[in-house]
Length: 602
Image 1 (cartoon, rainbow, N blue to C red):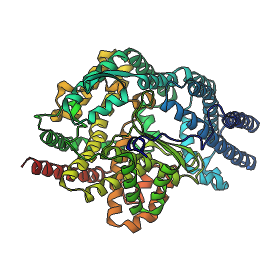
Image 2: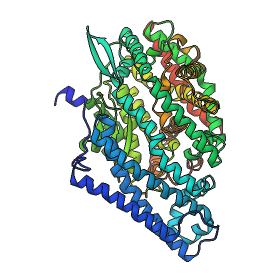
Image 3: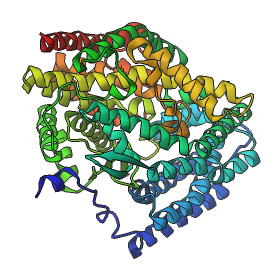
Image 4: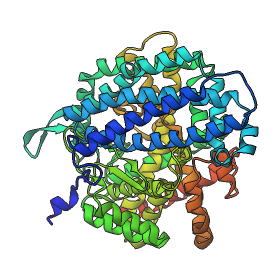
């Protein structure tokens, strides 16, 4: 196998269904639709919906247990069919068949959403404590039931909820797809190696890692021009999504989209405030890191396009094969089960690593069935690419640990969804530091700090941006210029004098798909990083004791809120001291990085 082939695998979807046109896929698609219709019939027969509050009698308990079983089956079958289609859309935005199948599935999503709403309304009408006392199945789904009880308190009338669900495919979902499709198909004309080339936006963004500063600068400028050309429809999408969320939150009795996001993230406001307080306190330390990186690059101050620049020219390239072998080896130091997961992902073709036109940017992992996942990356031949892949394989391991849970039990909030990924990324990064010489240590440490800077500093900027966006959107739409203004203001608050303010990226509101997908799809990443670092510190203290309980923790992330799970390891999420202690790990790395930079310059 050539290095090029080794470095750019595409995932294998035939293990799930032969093709989008296959009889097997069509049968599964029709099967899901029939399963959901049957679930609706069952709900009708049992009178599931908003009813007069009453303690559950024997009939209600039997009905509940049958409904939960059928709901879990429907969710499981839908997951596989939906994930299969989304894999094709994510890697080829021009695949019209996949796009049409995804559109078909939106109608199924609406029906399933309505059934979930009816189920939550019915649970809200029951005495959940009595139900838990009378049903083993209820006790196994206690967290989901208590969450449904709260959701029921924030529901509109059944007719309003039905209308909201039916309008979603032509509203917020359509705007999300517009952003995804425009971004996937966006190309940039750029001169490289003496000739003009048309590059996918993902390829251009990858040039932010190029060792040549002039290449980075030109790529940055060209990228901004490209986003500007698509800014009007993207601004329309963002304005529409955020106003829709404001309206629905008001109608459902949530104080704000942030309060809804906190509920869905399974954390409370004191936890968020403690974490964000510690994060703001750490910003001067991250600026120390940014100034040290500027010294390493030989520039007076970092430009925006220097944030991902390699700190050493001629640094080691990591092919995809080298990187995945290193990941498997380091995963093996934790447990044979974790190593086997990485090897299985390669063996069974779970990973799509090649950047290309029509493929979405970034990296993610998606559960597709039982213990099986698919990992999308846009692999860069650097340690950064290796650590990112380790991160996504951590998600796959989390899915493995959840495999024996029902779909309602494995509904993991975003805050806890990063637990395994951060742990696995840290495991690989620390191993890289141990085996590297000082020059390579600088590269690996910089990669780790670069990521931490994104998750703490950039996430702080994104959080500030989204807070202001929601407030302003209550009054009127924001123009492209105003979105740029809010973006630049939030970036400057977070990065301060660590980055030349004249080079900040005004279109980050267009770049980041998270703004279009879920409200406040940002602070959970910070929670995940700092919670993961805190857990890794406990692993380093006593690996054997840690391993015994960690897989069980991962399998329980849909069974309790973040505070309860954290308490298993003596962590108080309401205390800023815990978040500071995790950030102390990063501060120590910054000090070590400064020393390595000083040693390099001597």
